[in-house]
Image 1: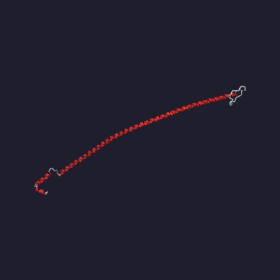
Image 2: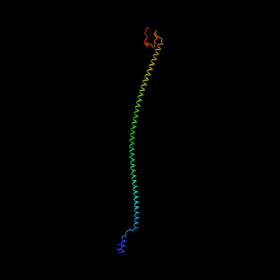
Image 3: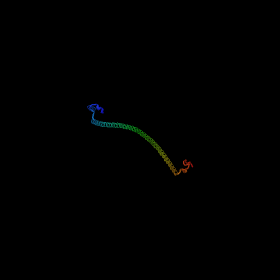
Image 4: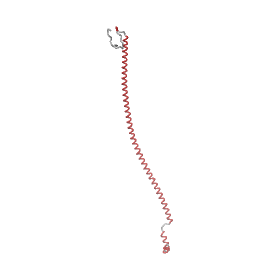
Length: 180
């Protein structure tokens, strides 16, 4: 201000002017410091970005490792469940096979029993048939022998005037009457 400049002696203005900026950085120094700080901030920013990216990648790796471990644990758990279910199915199948085998054996026993029963009945009927055939043959032989005897008897001369008998007459089996 002009009024304060008039009140102060001339060498005092130079002294005031130099004392206010003394030790204070000039604009070139400020610009240089600013550029230095800017470079430092840029390096810190790059370092911070790199550090955050590395942390991010490490967290992702940890996440993948944990997920892989969890996945392996789940696979193991599912495989154990599958094996347990397979064991149950195997047991059910074995029981069904045993039931089927028992039913087949029961049917086989029934079939064997029926076959034995039918075979026995056949043998009994065959024996009865052979017995009846033998009886019929014996009856036939008897009747043939009887008829032959009667024919022979008829062809023989009758003793002392005995009448010849007719095999078909009712008195054919009767004894001859004496003196007739």
